[in-house]
Length: 232
Image 1 (spheres, rainbow, N blue to C red):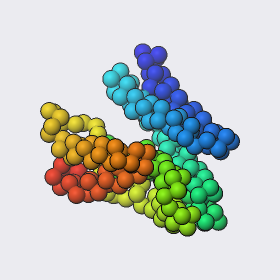
Image 2: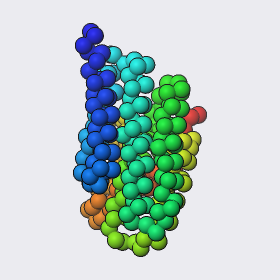
Image 3: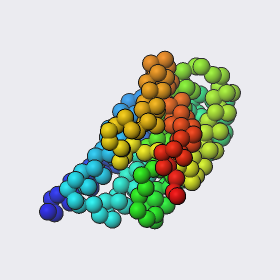
């Protein structure tokens, strides 16, 4: 029994290590795209630790706290430094780069607030930290693609960094991919999202990441009344 209890917590700590490795590759080697692979692996682990804990019946307050602490590094500190990297490399507003630290602060605040909340809902209130991390990765790809001038890049980075606190902590219901209805075709909002995401990805490839997150937010706001994304 004790061994089973340690399985999900070990995965959670693995996520923390992956987040640290991502930050290391970003800051020391200046290789953000290699760092992203650690983030992708951590995302898988972030799903698995909770799923395994529920399947084994070993969910605990310790596991919940560990998960939030690991997420704070992997999906809070990392995107903050990634945007700081973008300010330094791709913008005319390097002097504003430390505004990106708002992303880490907003992420930690969201995770601490989540731990104080009651029973988890079937939807998210505000943008989840992994989704926000992918938003930051999408911003990186746009800034590094030479699609915009350093001036425009700087404006985008300032706007994104400034909005992070709102996006992460706003009481805006956004649909979750957990607790899906059966059959799957009853999840119309999920199907619409995947269909639009696939089209955009085929057109833009890695540049599609940021638009996909924006579509996710807009779709949630548009369809929330139809899919019980808010409390009665």
